Amino acid sequence: MYLGLDLGTSGVKALLIDGDQNVIGSANGALDVSRLHHGWSEQDPADWITATETAIAGLRAKHPQELAAVKGIGLSGHMHGATLVDAAGDVLRPCILWNDTRSYAEAAKLDADPRFRKITGNIVFPGFTAPKLVWVANNEPEIFAKVAKVLLPKDYLRLWLTGEYISEMSDSAGTSWLDTGARKWSPELLEATGLSEKQMPSLVEGTQEAGTLRSELASSWGISAKVVVAGGAGDNAASACGMGTVSEGHAFVSLGTSGVLFAANASYLPKPESAVHAFCHALPNTWHQMGVILSATDALNWYSGVTGKSAADLSTELGDELKAPTGVTFAPYLSGERTPHNDAAIRGSFIGLSHESDRKALTQAVMEGVTFAIRDNLEALKSAGTSIDRVTAIGGGSRSRYWLASIATSLGVPVDIPAEGDFGAAFGAARLGLIAATGADPVAVCSQPETEETIEPVAALGDAYEEAYGRYRALYPAIKELSH
Image (cartoon, rainbow, N blue to C red; front, side, top):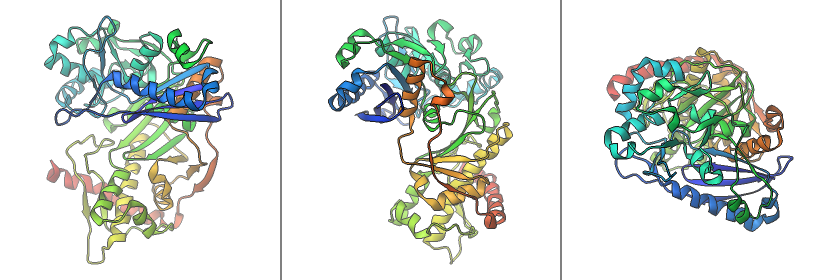
């Protein structure tokens, strides 16, 4: 048996698979986020351990024999979080999370130093780890002076599980301290933020052994044999391992609260000015590119609140058959935008409204706006050297066949819908635990799920969609001055 532990912002998920990758069971432990001030987002790392213990207890109650047979554990977690510990391994302050924006000024200052983009291949975003440490140095110098190790959230869980200070490439690529092409810490960038390599965990690949489960934990979980803990992955790379998006040309689109277009790469292809994330993947000698939009299903949920109709009802009202754009254009920048604009201040808009613009027309425009934002991500990935010939759709929005037909037509590629199953970050983490414990071939283990249905581009609407995308592209520069 192999265990995947996924530390999410709202909870820890523990998922158990057997050697044939059948899901045996899963359990959860809940978490809350503390928001003491505007733009702040924190969690107490002790709560992560409590939630993990709750999830393990839930699994053990239902599957005691299977849990006792665990040979490997993989870890996944929300990225970028700054978990600061002293020389004794004690936590110095609550973890500053990925969606905490307090260090925007520090991020801008680091990003203005050309070494950061050159070495990491990425913009220094306020959510990344390095600017958070500069904020702590500026605002909590007595805490900064005691920092012995900086750990990402899942790697603090590893410290509790194994007693080891170890991280891996995919999560560390989101710190602004990793030389992403060389897959090692950059002493130069650490020094630029007042730190040194001795304050970082050692690095392994996500598929490698990164400690073994402490005997007292193994005993309390009912396990008697040695349990290998894998390097694991940041949450997006772990999801990609779960989806089998690990080889050149493989990609997925996630229609969740936010939207992600994720492509695996056999080489390192940075283009930071496009606001594309170029990170190490969890597998050796593999990288990935990722475009992110901040409002995907969130945009439809916002419109649902305005109309008083559920998102599902709005989608049903459109039917499944794709229609030509009506001339109404929606910019889904409800909370700013990441790729390709890196613009926190931009806000959304409708344009092209007329007396004929009824609720259905606006629903269609909202969906098309999200589609075109994802198309922007595809164009950004293309400009950075990535080609995609098909994508797999995941996330709540992928239940809408209309939306998937819209995405297929705008991107010009087939969209595959996977057969029912759990292919998320916890499953990907469990796969990494299996690989680390058995030495199995990573690409063979991280296979793609069966495809239940493929949505093809609607060729007859290709020209109309291209014209509508042109209008969408013209909207951002037009509204930028009004939003700022």
